[in-house]
Amino acid sequence: MGQIVNSNAAFLSQQLNELGYNVLYHLTVGDNPNRLRKIFNDAISFSDIIITTGGLGPTQDDLTKEIISDCLSRKLVFDESSYSKIQEFFQKINRHMTNNNLKQAYVPQNSIVLENTMGTAPGFIIEDLGKIIVCLPGPPKEMKNMYLNLVKPYLSNKSENIIASKIIKFFGLGESSLESALEDLITHQTNPTLATYAKDGELSLRITAKGKSYEMTDSLINPLIEEINERLGNYIYSYNNKSLQEVVANMLITKNLSISLAESCTGGLLSAKLTSIPGISKVLDRSIITYSNKAKIEELGVNKRIIENYGAVSKETAIAMAEGLKKVTNSDICVSITGIAGPAGGSPEKPVGLVYIGISTNKGTLYKKFNIHGDRTRIRNYATLLALNMIRQTIIN
Image (cartoon, rainbow, N blue to C red; front, top):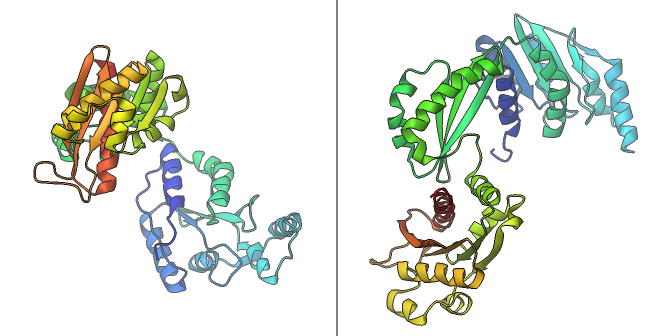
């Protein structure tokens, strides 16, 4: 019904890749015996390892264990150790153990029982038909704990390879342009492989290699990174999956450059991005939300005539805001943002999505004009990313 996000699948995929296992499918099925049986038999037919999460609880709709045992023609047998652990769990939390919890003490015959130290449902591992079936509880805390402590060592011993990835991040480049620039590398990919991802205005390229060791995967990945850097280095802001705000904040801190912000249409989003990074207090002097014209005049000293003649959303106002902030704070970098986030307030001359960003430093003041498409949320978020990238470029230059 879409009420629960399958975060278990994402966690397990990441973990399994580290061990050298290729995860080919994520399958989600409701608590229906016929559908459970069909999807498990399908999975057995095309996978060497099947990992299930959920359906090991005490209620009637917890059917995973029963269906899998039936499919593999295995009896469910009472496990005294699991029963004792369940009793101890209820005693520990000072609650009465109901009869239906006894169901959780039954496990498939000749399986490896996995103790659940954070809940009542034990997991188990079955090796059958040349396959490995791992059944884990559904609650993420219980599942992660059981996987990391018991399943990961087990699967690690059976894997001959590792899979390693490095993620390059780009800004100012579209996904189609990225693919076009790397078309020959993508077309002939084998090991490593390349995959692009676009999200919230940022673009990522994941390079993944399989090998016997991390030294081997590095030897496969690093030459490819060098080639990509030669082609698209101007658009790259991170080679290690760092966010744009992390990169900018770390640049400011490393170079000990003070910064102040004056935001209008973004309403503090730029400040929120930077202050999410530990240590930014060393360089961030202040952030002022000058949303109204009055605030721009009183807080930043913007000349009233500039707003009257050119409007609050103009290059002239953006420059005046940045320069006014520079006079007030004397920070090394002073940033201003003014724009029309919509959905109302636009005109043919100044449409919704028009944004000006100004930056004033000891070397002078510059501005950039942007026309951002999308709703109010996207316009404000993307304007914030554009400002971060301008700060990054200013530091580099």
